Structure formats: structure tokens, C-alpha cells
Image 1 (cartoon, helix red, strand yellow):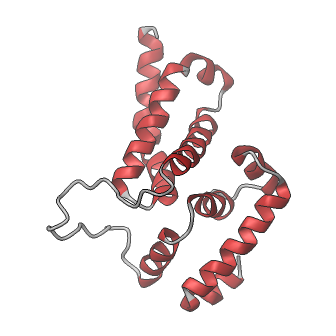
Image 2: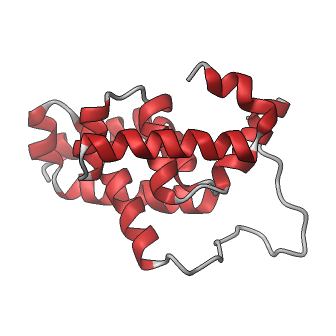
Length: 171
């Protein structure tokens, strides 16, 4: 990568890293896993930066990497229930500053109980407001699979969080 491309890459990362981290956090539910996911995605982006930059859609490229990488990790670690932590478990965990409302806390707990694929479908559909066809393309499945996953996941969220049922009814 030449100096100009490297400078543009650094500017892109500085401007968009926060948005990509928020998406990764929604996919993983853990700060450390989200940081690892963003780092992996940006590493892949750096390897292909000149081509991706010419295409004019680096955000789409990074999001696609995030979703595919998360599904790959999920497949590899499907039975693993451990999560990396910045501090030892004996110490109290840090409170998420964004979780300042009861709804966010409740919804966050419910999202952590979903499978990675269910979480990916919900993040793509409702957080990023993607159409079903695009979600199917990103996840490599049919539109019918996306629809059934969204339906089943919303039903599961209604069971996990009955207090959010009214919020989910509008979804």
C-alpha cells in the first residue's frame, strides 16, 4: 500500500471504527469479542484496501466481513462458553455506559441468549434496516430462511422478555 492509500485507510478507520464496533458488539454481546471481530475485519480490509476503495463501498465490505467472520467463529466455537475478559472474573464487571435504560438492559440480556445466527438476522433486519434479500445474500441463505429466522427469533424474544412484547409487536 502506498503512502496516500495508507493515509486514506487510517482516516477511514478513524472515522468508521466506532460504527463497526457497535455492529460487532450487537453481533457478539461482549466488548472483547467485538473488539476482536472489528480488528479481524479491519485487517482483512487493509489487505484489499485499494480495490475496496475504488469500489466506493468500504462500509459494505467491512459489514460483510463482520457477519461472515462472526458466523465462522460461531461454527468453530459452538460448544465454547468462555469469553475473553479484560479483567479477572473476581473483580466486578464494568457497567456499559450505553445501558442507561431498563429496556436496553433487558433487551441486551435477551440478545445474549440468542444464537449467533439469530442475532445476526435481527441486527441486519432491525438495527441496520436491511431488506430480506440483502440479508439472505450476506448470510448466504435463502430469503425464506431469513423470514423464518426473523419470525422464530422474534417469537423467542417475546418468550425471553415478555415485558418487551409491546415493543416487539411493532417490529
